[in-house]
Amino acid sequence: MTISELRPMAEDLFKQVRALSADGVGVTRESYGRGESAAADFLRDFALQQGLQVSVDGAANLRFSLPGIDLNTPAIWCGSHLDSVPQGGNYDGLAGVIAGLLCLVEQQRSARPSALPLQVLGFRGEESAWFGKAYMGSGALFGKLGAEDLALKQRNTGETLAHCMQQAGADMDAIRAQAPLFDKRLVRAYLELHIEQGPVMVARELPLAVVSGIRGNVRHNRIECIGEAGHSGVVPRWLRRDAMFAVADLIMRLDEHWRVLLERGTDLVVTTGVVSTDAAEHSISRIPGQVGFSFEARSKSQDTLEAFYQLMRAECRAIGRERQVRFEFDRRLLSDPATMDGQLCELLSKTCSRLGTAFEVIPSGAGHDASLFANAGIPSAMLFIRNQNGSHNPDEAMEMDDFMPGVQVLHETIAALT
Image (tube, rainbow, N blue to C red; front, side, top):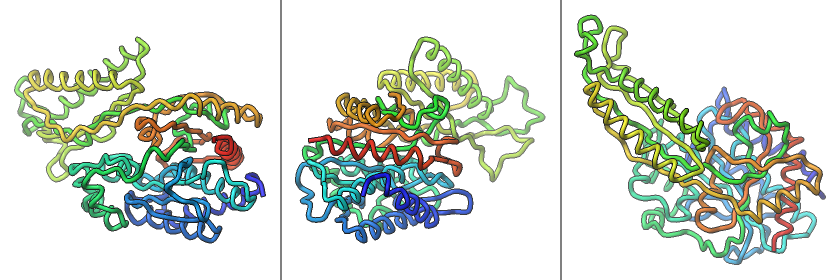
């Protein structure tokens, strides 16, 4: 049995998980919720049918390995996340878990285990869409979930993250104590296969890419601009305290700062993905007295993130004075940028070259669980698979002709590590 011969198995796994989590538009696998749990249960049953060993860690993440492997020995970890955004695509996260499982199945059937045992992780709760925080399953492993994180509420049900994690079987006493749930010294390397979530590889006609680093981000899920509501026809501009114009002013100022920084060669992306007035009171004839919006900036540089964040706060103060409004901020969330391990990147690159697969080395604009491992000092690397139509939408279109060579590169890289 070879990796290429496992293609029908891979196609069936993607098909089955899609059916389990289909929502009528795309797929929905809620972090620590129904869709994610359904995917986890299905993959657990599949692994057991293949004769693999399956365990659940203190954060309810799945861990797959060859039978009889002692999980407390040095190993290679490989994996990705099980959840999705609402009405998302089927390959974001899932491709990395299935790729790792295929590597284990090949090792099992060929009776050729890697020199260092392979453990495949199916992380829960990577997406920030559900609780406003990313890396919940992997973050809990490192003791990074605090009381404020555990009190975050699920966007649809209002249930706390702590409740949802407990329902999924997580060890909440250990998580609340912020105790690491594993010995990071036992993880010799962390590898993650993932679809690219932007257009670069499609534009450059690259089936694979080796990731050089991962952008970090700073964000607020909700900022409130508070002014004064009034009748649109009777309040002149000089007496208005219009929250919507204040927010629009802020966004345009940030866009201009962003443009100038890009001209200087600074790595930065800035997004306001949510803007809303109160549906219970807004009207075309009412001056908005309150507007809520989100803020996010991403960069490969921590210094850039901090500088731009402070610039945003300074602009809020200036606009507050000029337009007689005030800005109120929820908790600031920060994910650190990460640099991938040079030796692992070189090994992935050499494997791609040896197999004759076109690739380039590119950065990742999106965040991944791999960043936590890299920033914890664990040698980490990522392999991207070409994917049409972007990500976080139901039109993700990874081709199996790209995925299977990616699994082959992953498999041979794992085999080369000692």
